[in-house]
Amino acid sequence: MDFQTAVKTCFAKYTDFSGRASRSEFWWFILAEVVVLVVASLIHQYVYFIAALGFLLPVLAVGARRLHDIGKSGWLQLLMIIPLINLVLIYFFVQPTQPETNAHGAPPVA
Image (cartoon, rainbow, N blue to C red; front, side, top):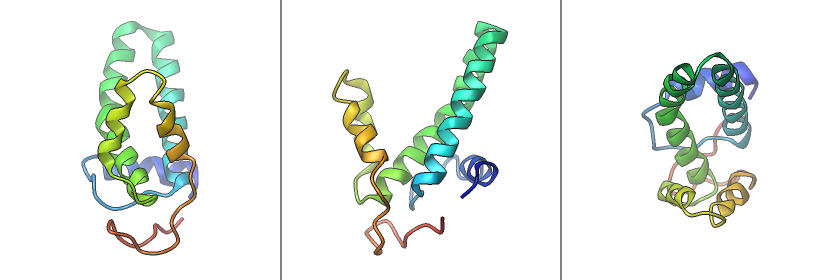
């Protein structure tokens, strides 16, 4: 999946916490979020706050779908609030896609 398709897909599925998201879809979207937030922070603090709020639901949704892709529960995102333990999420996010169908559906078309 390329950058533009990943961003479009994640914003189109911003409230879809079911299904699966490929590794490339997740990381391209995270790159887009980081770029937008860096630019927004250079503009003004309020612009950054609005951009961060705009990305909140899509990031949570794609994170849950990415965890589903490796056979984990989307609720594991709650580890983000625990310092140092949240590094486990990075490990989960870089894992390869499960090639077989799991409880969350068929593998995503990457």
